[in-house]
Structure formats: structure tokens, C-alpha cells
Image 1: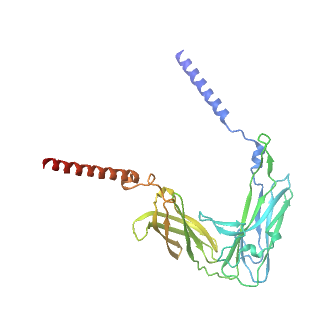
Image 2: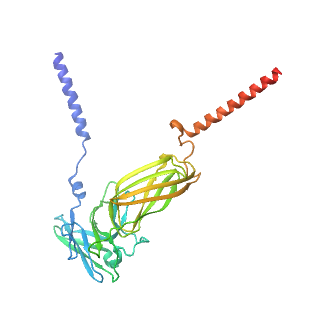
Image 3: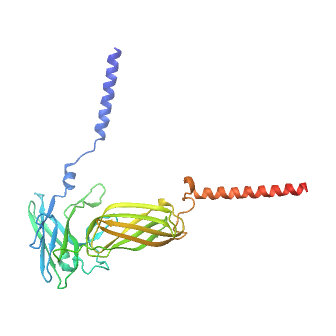
Amino acid sequence: MVRLKTNSIVKLFLCIVLCICFLQLPHVNADNISNNAAEFTISPVYPREQKEDDAGYFDLNVKKSTTVPVKVKISNLNKNQDIEYLIKVGNATTNDNGTINYTNFKNKKDTTAKYQLTDFISKTELKQKVTVKAGSSSEVTVNLKVPKQKFPGMIAGGIYVERLTNAYVDEKSGMNTRNHFSMTLPIILTEQAKVKRIAKMELDKVTVKNGPEITAKLHNVKPVMFGKLSIDSKITKKNRSTVLVHKKVNNYQVAPNSSFDYLVSDSSNQLGAGKYTIDMHLQSGKRKWHLVKDFVITSKQGAPLTKRTGWFGVSMLLWIIVVVLILIIAALIVVVVRQRKNLKR
């Protein structure tokens, strides 16, 4: 009888656990799965200027005063619905995390760049829309008009394709939300068979924000793209050798004629007000750069004493309090000793 009761209790407990697990399983809706699928692909249609047929992107060796048709094939995988797409052309920039963005749509040109990709394209072709019928494909053409003047090095950018027909209304919330599906094909242009890959990195400025948060603006001033960049940065007090902040990163990628903000130190390093020096060693393959710059942290920007640490990881404010107390005690001892000597006299 005892065994039967025990088994019954165990079975009842297992049933309760299974019911709870079943109730907690997420409800999957087939319509949501289809809405979350991109349902399209893009592929390059190479012109004769393409260097390699299987590159997977546009790597073009162009000639001056020519027009190069760059075509993108968009395939609509949805067999039941026509879908509209947005096609835009952008320029290559370097992100702050050390990756290349091939579709920057801002018009601001780098001061060191002679040309950028969007200079070769008419305004009507910088932004286009196309509707692809269900289960079929369509080609979109962007014509690159190469100028008469030769350009050095390389120019980089990309074609961005975004699916527009994917909006739906959530009846419960009443909000109109849109899933975002997009793809990009890089475009790289050169006019020489062999590009001189002479790169030059510069340290434009050091920015200090409250905390302090210290950022170095690194600038590639040459029309050359390169990768596997390592950055070894150190911060010291000016004219001192003790390293206060040390940071190292690897495998950064840099776009031609571009700059990016490299975070050298965040607020966790607790640097106070004063004059400092940033020392940076950069290397990409055989290329090496040594960049040094002085900067100042003001009293408002520096970390407060309550957040700064001193010896043995103890708060600087606590150390100051201890030192003050020691000085007060020492002063009291001197006063007491002198009074005793006077009383003896």
C-alpha cells in the first residue's frame, strides 16, 4: 500500500510538471514565421570591368571617361506576392568598432578624398525603387560615370537593397510596425592594374568627455583599404612613464580616406584632472605607425575622488581622510607634549 501511494504521488508530481512546461511553451504562429523571412536574394551581374568573376562583389578596374553599368539581380522568393524594394548607393566608411560600412548615405565627404563613389552616379540613380513580381527576378542598373581625371588608389562603396513590402498592423496595439530586411553588395573601383597600397594613419584629435571617457580620432588619409590592423594604446601623465591606461585590439578594418573614433579609455579607469599623453602603436602587416598626442582632463571631466582609487585599491577620498586624521593626531600630540613640558617648568 505504501509503495502504491508513493508511485501515485510521483506520477501526480510528474504530470503537474509536464503541464506547467506545456503551458510555458511559446506559441508559434506560421504567419509570423513567414513575416520574419527576408524572402529575397541579391546577386551581382558583373560587367566586363570585373577583375574576378567569383568575387561575390563588384571589384572593378575602370578607365577614365567611361560609363560602367553595375547591375544587381533581385530575386523575389515569395511565390504569392509582388514585393517592392528600395535600392540606394552609399560610400564606404570605417565604423568605430573597426569594421567597414559600405553604405554610408551621408553627403559629407572626407577632406582627404579626391572622389567618392556617389560622385560617379546621377542623383536619379542614387535612390531607386523597383517592384519584383512573385517568384521572379529583376535587374536594377546603376551607371558609374568615370571622370576624365584619373583618381589614385581605390574608391569603395556599396549597393544597398531593402525590402519595403513587409509592413503590417498589430490590431491589439494599433501600432504600425515594419520588419527590416536589407542586403548590401560592396563596390570597389581602381584605375590601375596594381594599386600602390601605401597607407598613412594620423591621430587627428583626442576628445575627453565627463567620466572621463577618452576617444582618439584615427584617420586614414590615403585612398587605400586595409585590414588586420592592431592598435596598442597607452595613457600616461605628461612627461611621466608610468602607464595609467593600456588597451590593445586586433583585426580592425579601415576604408579608404576615412576616420573613426577609437575609445581608448572609458570612465572605469578613474583618471583625474591633469595633463596626459596618449601613445599609440598601430600595425597592419608590414605597415607601422607611432602616434603621440598630449591632452588635458579638466576638473569637471575628471573622475571625482569618490570614484578614484589609490594604493591597494582603497578609495582616494578615504586615503585623504586618513592622512588628514593622522596630521590632526600628530598636531594634537605635539601640543600635549609642549604643554607637559611647560607644566614641568
